Length: 312
Image (cartoon, rainbow, N blue to C red; front, top):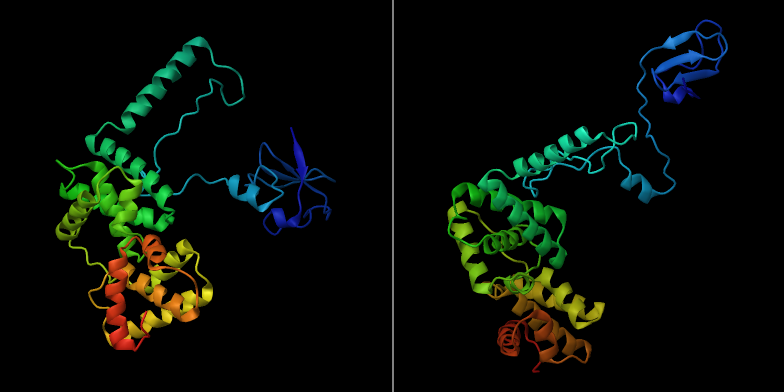
């Protein structure tokens, strides 16, 4: 039998032995009994040790060695509830399995892996969410965006929208819809660049999702695109703040309605560069924003007429 000393904080309101009053208490790790080391009196039976079975010396180790399993997620084809069978051919005590038991567990592993993707819908989800993980990693989007994209795709699958269409195109459209719904500045061009699907195919699937699932998207805020374009173009914080001021004035005057947010943000940044004396050309800003120089000039005309901006 193995024992370890315990403190009052380890057990439920027990700080001393009720028989002899000793504070020297031991726990039997096998039976869960609290025993007095002085007189041998069993104070409590079947106590659960809620502390971890390991020692962690840093925050990273504590996070990596959690006792709980992975959280449930709709971005997994089985929502994280599948069986996980160890690949090592050893029992709980560390001894190697016999030949008969080894062959038995090999068959169990085979049928376990087959049963997880038995239904066509499960195979579809597995392929789609593998692609979703790849796109999310390339675009550096957060976990809540991935969860929303998985939710939209599951709804599309229930509606039968996947039949006859590319899984990759529909999952890319679901990810774009999630970015739009959560107001994350990612464009169709960004998603098409990391995907193997053309931009027009993703746009077609996106329109289908909006129409069939009756999803209402918020209006894109061009201010959210300013920091992204400024970081790509290497602009200063002072210029970025000036561009945000220009966009706020444009939104108050109503001239931003119906305009491409990226084009408006790019035009505001270029105007801010001119006002703050930062040496950036229209081509530099256009390439960072993914728009044309003509778009920047056209948006500038609208800003100049309303906000009394100087001539470029």
